[in-house]
Length: 217
Ligand SMILES: O=P(O)(O)OC[C@H]1O[C@H](OP(=O)(O)OP(=O)(O)O)[C@H](O)[C@@H]1O
Ligand SMILES: O=c1cc[nH]c(=O)[nH]1
Ligand SMILES: [Mg+2]
Image (tube, rainbow, N blue to C red; front, top):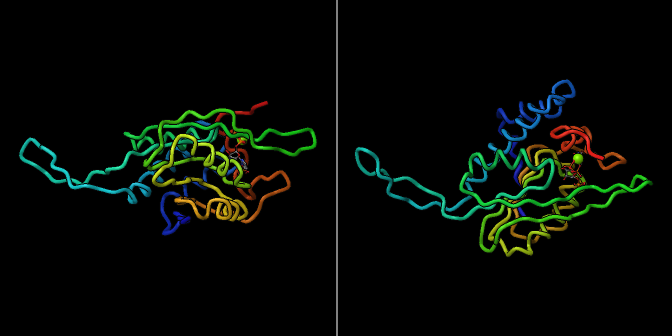
């Protein structure tokens, strides 16, 4: 497994991440979702550089131009809920991609413990395709690991790009341990040092799903 941290060299990306984190800005849900989407667009551009390209004749009004076009079929998948705006951003650029969705959410018990529940998968045939799996938060890493394993039921992808915006160091190490031998690249915008007692990333940004879509029961 390869890990790609895209926050260096410095770019406009860090402005969008700062706005997601900033407690004085993040409570504007339209802006929060749009920043997730904009970061998805940046990841799409970076991931597109890893695709296979073929030189292709393009008819113009004045002649024939040669352009390099991507060859593989891409499938953008995301983890509900918080993955949706990131998914939209990836799809803005990878607009011919097929799409998949996985529900993976924390279900809390009265003692404050939680387990990850996967109840819904909707995805196409993944055999030999380039799969992107998006979730803005990589905290313990359980959601991403289980979602990755769940979609394998739809076929064996050629490669899987796992995309997260804010990761914890512990979560990165967990994914490395669980998926280290898989044909996977883990793309991240930033890595924070800590997880708190409730497995939230510190400093992180809070609850991405709630900030994008409001509280849930
Ligand atoms: O790495 P983990 O410890 O598994 O945590 C990360 C997961 O938690 C969040 O989802 P959440 O359960 O809050 O669902 P939501 O998107 O519906 O709010 C986030 O979007 C990830 O899916
Ligand atoms: O810090 C975290 C951890 C899980 N889910 C979030 O939205 N934020
Ligand atoms: Mg949430």
